[in-house]
Image 1 (cartoon, rainbow, N blue to C red):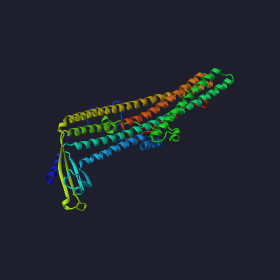
Image 2 (cartoon, rainbow, N blue to C red; image 1 turned 90 degrees about the horizontal axis):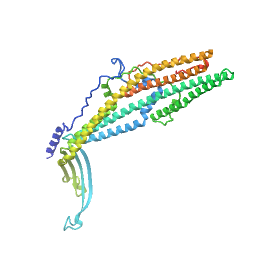
Image 3 (cartoon, rainbow, N blue to C red; image 1 turned 90 degrees about the vertical axis):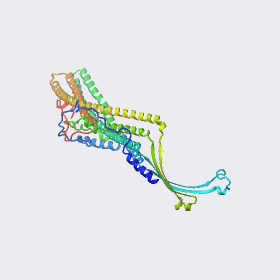
Image 4 (tube, rainbow, N blue to C red; image 1 turned 120 degrees about the vertical axis):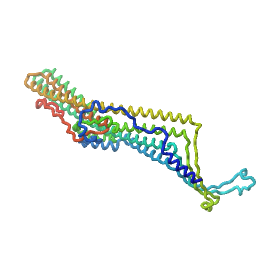
Length: 492
């Protein structure tokens, strides 16, 4: 009898090679061969993208912020805990493939009732009982229910790992973007303060001329109004820089005031990596962790169809017991006290097929939803890359135009100062040139910030980096205005 049960178990193992339900296959999506907005690069010479792209910026402060964020960001800690939970559940599900073995023992004092033992005195109805044994139970996975469940757990764990990677990409992208915005705000703040200093010198000169009777009070009022307007931009920029400092500290897992001292000292914008190598949309499927997470959940939902389908068929369980039982503790482990049991159990709720088919339909619908979610994730990823590429390309063009505007405005301010000194122009021309210079330099600083930030956005969209060995970002030295009181603010 034991040999027959073992033979049945061996046959079950051989039959378990097949599992019910569909096998997961990566959906075949029709993708374009290249991005519509991708810049022209020599793919044959471009090295593989580097995920640690922020190192190309050669900025120790940014490096430290990214390292802190990857180590201590609370969202990442939550995602890591979810990943560890999924792995723990996967390890637990893996034990379903093997027999469940338990050991138990019992020592009991028993008294039978008079009805159970009629005619016996009370003393004869009392007795002791001792029992010990090892039990084993193993579901014979003939139809793949256990294996499909394990497959689903494994795919869920893979999706959770991809979620963690996707969040790392997002956090690094946010840190780089916030740092670039901070340096841009500090650059705009420097431009505003420098222009305010120049306008203050202009006001002092006009007030001196007015005291000497050479200018009217109208000119003095206009110069003072322009200075006040420029000074009014400083508090807003200071607040913007402070908010960005607080945000970077929290992203790094610190209190908002933790990096105020380190980040208050103005620094240059990070170097601009160029050109960007976007690769192909096919590469994106392998690189974007959010796409990998969506595919993992589709895989898990597909496997759950097999779990539900297996419930249409009976479950076979092989059980066994080796133990000992006696009415005296001294005889518990004697040969005649031995007990054993080998059993094959069948559990089949064939009359409950309606509920099972309803669960199969629900699993099919879940898989269909995950397929649609996967396809939508791919489309959104492609849109994200296309948008990032076109924004970066247009930011480069806009920066070039605004650079020319800032240079021309600086020359105009210099000439206006010279004409004013020579008496060939009035104060209105000087004030207008200074106002235009401030606007042009501020716009140029914002454009430079957008360009570097858009490059980081391309990294975030591609979930990777770009080829190393980039030329350093060229900081434009503006020609200064006239020496002395009309020295124009230099965006350097």
